[in-house]
Length: 118
Image (cartoon, rainbow, N blue to C red):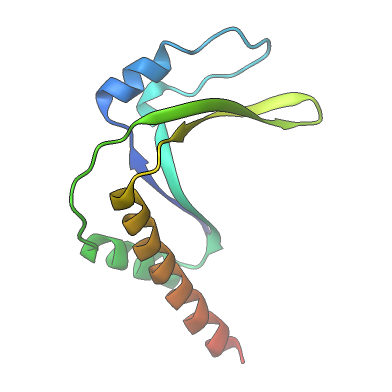
């Protein structure tokens, strides 16, 4: 089983800006800025066939290019410990359209998987 999520790489100027924010939280382990990303959909554990179906579906998606603008910063905490820092993205119609396409792709595969189990 593979643990999957769908994400976009951060553009270099945004990655550099975020890298400048690193520091100041006791005990934090920082991710290499090369690994900064914008998560579009967490999928979770899937088998190899499902991973391949999703990869093939993603490679066929076509969307117009768009700009990202950041908005807000907050923390994911658990038991009083910071687990992650997240930065919001301003609403963007093109990004929302991409997310809808991804949701449709993943939902379709889940329906197929569920129908095969019955």
